[in-house]
Image 1 (cartoon, rainbow over the protein chains, first blue to last red):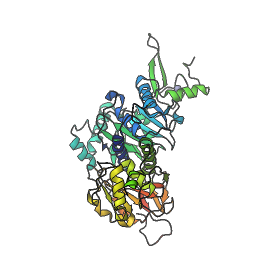
Image 2: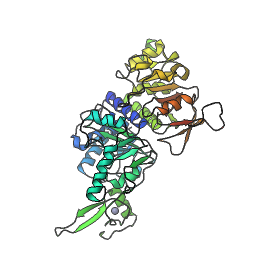
Image 3: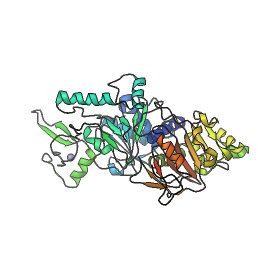
Image 4: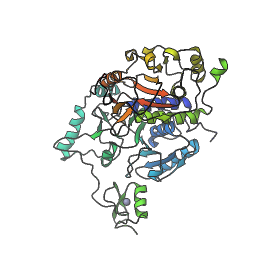
Amino acid sequence: MTDYNFAYLDEQTKRMIRRAILKGLAIPGYQVPFASREMPMPYGWGTGGVQVSAAVLTPEDTFKVIDQGADDTTNAVSIRTFFERTAGVETTTTTCDASVIQTRHRIPEEPLSEGQILVYQVPIPEPLRFLEPRESETRKMHSLEEYGLMHVKLYEDISRHGHIATSYAYPVKVEGRYVMDPSPIPKFDNPKLGDMAAIQLFGAGREQRIYALPPYTQVVSLDFEDHPFEASKADHPCGMCGAIDSYLDELIIDDTGGRMFVCSDTDFCEARQLAGHKGKDAA
Amino acid sequence: MQAQALSGGFADPATQSAHAFRSIMEAMARPGTLHGVSGALPPAPLSRAAGAVLLTLCDTETPAYLAGGANCDAVHAWLAFHTGVPLVGPSHCRFAVGSWSALTPLSAYPIGTSEYPDRSATLIVECPELTDSGEILTGPGIRNNAALSLPEVAAFQSNHALFPLGLDFIFTCGDRLAALPRSTKVCAPMGATEVTPCM
Ligand SMILES: [Zn+2]
């Protein structure tokens, strides 16, 4: 541990990130620019989330990392190991035992509590980017609350597909002011963003943005009166634990095309199985 | 003087600033909640909490304004040694510290721009007392409502009306702090008649 600064980053960088986090919390949903640092891992591995975690962790924290709901992917394991080594923190896979959870593409099924912090890895923080490539223009659009084009794009989905086809990174409006990209979580997770007891922090490394949702913040998924937002998921129970209310991954289980649906949140699924719940595909 | 300037910083900067930041972050994320901070022993008149906030957030990149009694040789020397923070007037500061009467009027500070509302000052307000009672707070970070002993009401209501522009506040007293971001709506407590009612 003595080969590193605590949590890898130097103190000046942590101060800069901490100041950005505080402004992010003061202006929910607004993207605060920050000077992202090189991290000893590729950008696709969530360097934004890693820098935010490094700025908030204390040695007493218990840290969990999930990648698409799973604790055991290469990405999750390497980030967990990184902070075990550089910050000396305890790690866990159990959602309720973690004080800081770094996540890529999911919100845990189990509701989070007041002592917890959820750190999102964000690839593209700007929800208006696909409409307007120029940062100077999207900044202006946010400052003027010019979100009409965003609604037009969602409505085009409806005329083309009969419903809003956007199923990941579904845009939200925060406290009636800023339109925000919730990171590529499935829209099934969108309703958990609002009124959450935990602090939510979003870090985009390559794009150098930090944004935040304080606890109990109003977060509304964009929709239309005639096409209200729906938090959809595969219409099956989990094959392993039988849960009917969790987000599911579809797995191919044999070479004849056999399929099974299983909770994407592995900790949630395993806890249910331990408690005796059994799905139709469980051994 | 020299000896005083060299002492009173964090003995273990990495972990003590990590702990202090978590207190500050929890305070900013949950307006009206009180949090302990320790590890800093700044010269008078700075409180230990204000000292810890300055050590945790300020450096050569964050010009600061010392208001009233905080603007003294002992504080200058201590901040110069431990943070290197450049001292400026209120209109160019990122942080300001002092008593409420020394810090006001709030019109002196940068409130950010419409495209960069984060480019605004954070005021560290030294308070003779700090309790979770008094003015009623609602908004992001607050489940139903919270209460905090604020030095006044109208200035915070005007600041909130500027949202998403505006100032953010950290209130310090002894070794405790609380915070009030611009997003918080402030109302006078029930029964108070001389102050502006809830808008
Ligand atoms: Zn399951």
